[in-house]
Every structure is written in C-alpha cells, then in structure tokens.
Image (cartoon, rainbow, N blue to C red; front, side, top):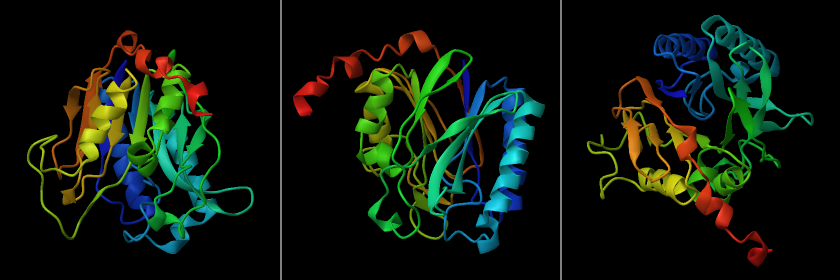
Length: 263
C-alpha cells in the first residue's frame, strides 16, 4: 500500500484550495499512491487564514466535495479531505471526508475533541468509525484529539485499523522558527506524540500538516515501532510518499489494553 501525505500552503480561498488539491492529487497519482490525505480543515481552509466567509456556505462546500469526488475518479486515488461541514442541525463540524478511487463518498470522521480555543468555531462530533480501501482498514483522528487524546487512536487500533491518519494544523505563517531536524529534543512535542501514537498501538500513524512558513511539525509517516519512515521538508509545499506493509501493523499493544479496568 502506497500512502501519500499532502503538505499544501494555506488556501487563500476555496478555489485556491481546490487548485492545490488537484495539483497534489495528480502528483500522488504519478507516484502510484493508493490514498492521499490532506491537513485539517483544508477546504475552505483553517479559520482565520484569509478565505471569504461565503466560502464556508454549505452549497459551496458541497460543490467542492463534488469536485473532490471527480478528481479522485480521474486520478484513481482514494482521498481523505478535511473540510468544514454543516451538520443536520446547522452547527458547523470539523470533519474529514473519505472518498474512494472511484469517486464514491465512503463517509466522514468528525473531530470529537476540540481544542479549548476552538469551542467558538466548531461543535464537536460524537462518533468514531473505521474505513477501508483495498482491504486496508484505517481510522482518522483530527489534530488536538490525536495529540492530546490517545484513546482516539487506540480505539481504531483495537478495532482492526492498520494505520490512523492524523490531519492537523500547528504552526504559523507570521511568527516562529523554522525547524531543522525531525524529532529534535528542542522541537515542539508534536513529532514525539506521533511516534507514541504508533508505537503504543503497534500500528502506522500518518500525520499531516500544512507547509506554513514556520510549521511546528512535519507531515510524517511513522511505522509500528515508532520509527519515522518519511517526513516532509519544513516549510516546503509537496508530498510525503511511502510504501507501508499492513502485515507489520499487528495492533498487538492496543489489543492487550485491559479496557474493563477503566470502565
């Protein structure tokens, strides 16, 4: 299974986001990727990063999702695309849609644990689910919940996920420092958390960030032993592509967890 992670710049608008989306999916197709994942809230973009309020209207988001499905079909690549989405009650959710390589919408995962600073932006979701592409079972955990709530990853591993995708956003275009060495002791904790989510569950962990000017983490693919298989170059737009072996993701440690002791 070949996995691709997209590290795009912040979209200036919904149309700009779709430009980068099409470009990076096409590049993933040339790398023979089976699936590609984008960062958190990629369409229309993370709140406060410059897109017009109208880009968050449900009609425009639905139009964008239709475009996503067509791009998946044209490139024969499955896609995880994080989006803002209006729920049945009109509340705004932070979600990640899963699209098959034939353009079929397989469902979406909601962000269920919001960062406290996001309580005024989104309403948390309430459910978790697994998805399957070419026989590969996977879960999704979004940003804060993957970094601060490891239970979101353990649930997926206990239920048969071989890999968990982790779209997120940490960093800035205006202030900070450009990191140099992946996992350095002086880096923010995020890359260390990626390692732990993989090794504490014995699965692959694929964490996806924007290519901001000062990113606090690099998009990274971590193997079940906690080793970084591949990572993005800090601050550079592009793809991370790696072949994974699902047989190595046994989920052994996750399945040994004694859930009943904590009920």
